[in-house]
Length: 266
Image (cartoon, rainbow, N blue to C red; front, side, top):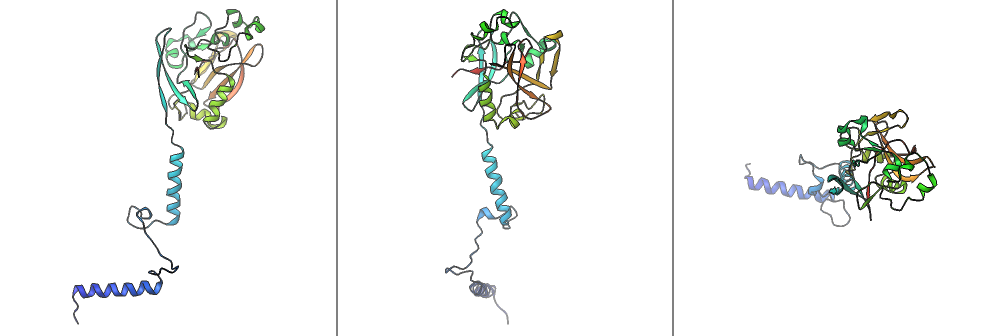
């Protein structure tokens, strides 16, 4: 017996309907229906497994939650017409590079090489960074010098900006994931091992020791003054190192040379 193509098609449809009815596929009374939406079909045209769907969903959420929008720009320091980058991080606005303002006393380029100032900014005594009298540089008249610290304290930062306090540095590290990971996220993506997730662009400018005038740790460590004193001869700093991912805190002799980052006034 010979069947036409149309007859074969009709016969096949009838068999399929009978099969689905027997399996409960067309049931509306609580039967198990299988729906293949476009989202549950892979690139090959085959349905994805439930585990594949779960992984895709999780991946999408992770990408969304880690999305960071960086808002920044530039401004000019009216004192010397140097241009600096700035970036908003949480509720704060930070300079996105180290200060490179030339003072009459107690500031240096690493290894006394001007090209290092262009890349890393200058290294300052604490009292110089604070723009306190010369007598404070050598740790004399400590009580008199301490009484001149203001909140906020401009120091040698440009107008409208100030030297960050220990608390302001803590606000920054809390927003960027805590001390254990803030270092890697704030380091520049070039020059060492950072990811620079927030555009902070921290660079390893090293430091200068007063004893013997030795320069150390360029390209491996970055040190930044805070306005906050630890003792009569020391002040708090924040540090990042190529040896670890965190942003650490310590105290440093005020007559050693460290970098300066400024925060915009509210």
